[in-house]
Image (cartoon, rainbow, N blue to C red; front, side, top):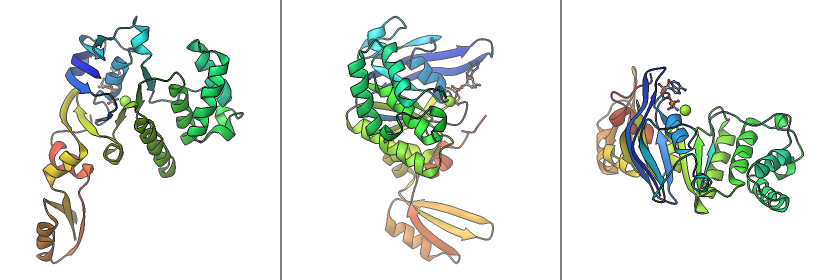
Length: 282
Ligand code: ADP
Ligand code: MG
């Protein structure tokens, strides 16, 4: 379990409070989403969880124990995949994995066997002798995931893992992170894509301006608005209305003169209709 208690992070030079009194509890085995617009504080939060940044106030506990930079044993439970590509272009996949293993004092036999297993799991095994520069964006992301898993962490943290990827690669990353979570690993994912959060996450913390504004399961968020959506296509654009039952939705649809469509409510609807009020990009 990860406990984030009264966490505040101030960047003194910029005079910005990137996080303000954040309290969160993430259970072991959860697929937890941090959803929020650019500048919300998502990266700051996971950088503090990964001990890359020191909190201004508050603390983090992993399985009850206080996380500090010197607690290498606790830090080893966590593995972070950063928002930006951190792979060297001139190294092969095998070399990337070997370097990572050596940094963590793994022996060569373990590095080889675990790398092979992971590269296979991520669909990269046939590319192992290629240099990173020859990989597509999606393959690079997958390699970063492989590298993060080499040391067998218990908690995998992914910071906006699908930004800039084509739709097929996005789906591959989704499948991969889902499979990792099903194997029992706790996964924390930051994203500003609502569809991604809805597809993957068991619970979602909507964060904005350094605060957790709402915390729910995607289903609960959607239920609150109404699970059935009717889009009415008017001359001035599309208007959506939301209903708790299909019957009510269809009843409303029957009263419309314009073309209508019944569909399932999405997290994006929730964001625009409940959470989005007053929640905007900086
Ligand atoms: P997100 O990942 O949700 O886009 P960040 O955590 O990167 O948000 O940023 C949160 C806030 O902190 C923003 O206002 C950003 O400008 C500011 N910030 C982030 N990193 C730094 C830094 N190193 N120095 C000063 N301000 C920063
Ligand atoms: Mg970020």
